[in-house]
Image 1 (cartoon, rainbow, N blue to C red):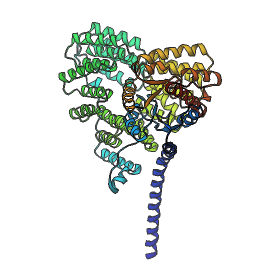
Image 2: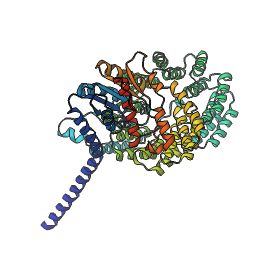
Image 3: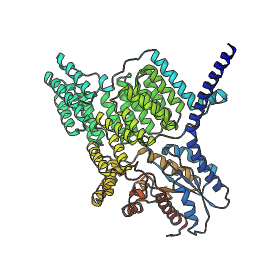
Image 4: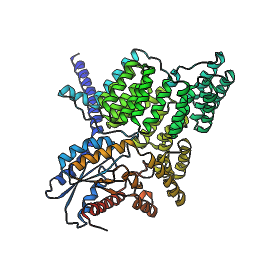
Length: 636
């Protein structure tokens, strides 16, 4: 008996030891890659700091900077015999935003006391790439355990199990479904056909959905809802012109057609035809001055045009009309985020949750604020877990969790959460898109990525981002003809998107069609000049103030293949800034030797992360600009 007990104890000990070793191995594996990269980068920075009496250059940026062009820049500058010795400090961080760079810049300047600051940033702003590592840490031994990624996984599973035990709360309808509309028809067939069509549309069966909505129109030709549903079905398929005609008819001829005005305004806003959008929404308000949805959509137009005061007034008016309309608070919060008023945004999202504790969009917005803007991942995880406690099959919460884990470098749990999102709603565009992009960018599982992105496009053909990601995926694999076809389809959905034009231009460049490439590059420049990202714009100006107050010289670098004039327009004419134009030299180099000589991918459409050769070309051009713009020395 004693011998059996000893054997049993040994087995338990071996099992426990194996589990502990696996957990430690997993934890180490998740952290070691980032540690090696950062150690290598910091080792070079320490060497630069140890050299007295030199001109110190601080380099800021994202993954296109970290461990890339700053490495050769120091040697290139010192070879130019300017009469000054240089040392370069690389503080680029992969996956970060211009907001994070701007926030950290002041600390870096105090620590390194640079003479020159070189910055290239903005490409990640508004994209699906997330920020840097979590900056928070819990004190004590228990706090240390809680920061382990393995512990957080176990805790998350416990929360899910508890939510499942409580039973699933039924899914709530989207804001469009909750709108209060005036019914001009009480035909029982109306609701039947609308429910039938909505089911078909949710499943991507657009032909059947259209038949059902047309039947609803015949059953009750005086009711605007049937027309709006038919228009939304056309819009889902990317048929904006057809949707527009249907909505114009509904808005102009039917009584109580506020929803038609809202959706028509939204179409114009999505096409960036803001004047048309505002005009149609104001016409709707003239007919129904107490409709909160018209105010919300009008606020969205003003917000996208950066008319923040007007946007806030519109959202406040919507809340005045209906204090229980969570969209008013959510949109107000989003406007505050655009203005970097994160405390006010947090309060607005909190108000939305207090008004309707089961509104999933409010949790998603607050979670995104914590993870993407404030980089407070623990708070973000807590918000998404609350959403899952309400509904264990909440797709948005799983997507948010996946994004949090991906941002903190935990790809294993990120993939698990994205898969759960697809499992909860197999036809959900956002779930399919996020899993597809994760496979392609983080895992290099191109077959799986292509499959998911194609499913996302089928789920919502009117949204352009899945086309873009799929096109870039083909570009990375040198399937240029396939990429061209995808970008052409994307252009039909968003004819004002500069990234689509850049993707097409790059395709034609690689296919040897130079004239077409030039045409699409010019179109891309025309559209990007008008719609420069407001987040990048704000952070560049803020960064300029921080750097110039410290008496350092500022060097702003435009990305390869991009027009430097767009960067120059951010600043005032009197600003003492050196600009680096990389458009001509990279386009010429790619034309002569091919794209793959200079870039390893094409994540931005017309450029990507540089090869060693590309980084040296970038460093040489930055070195020339520093020599000429700061020291008045022309170099070869």
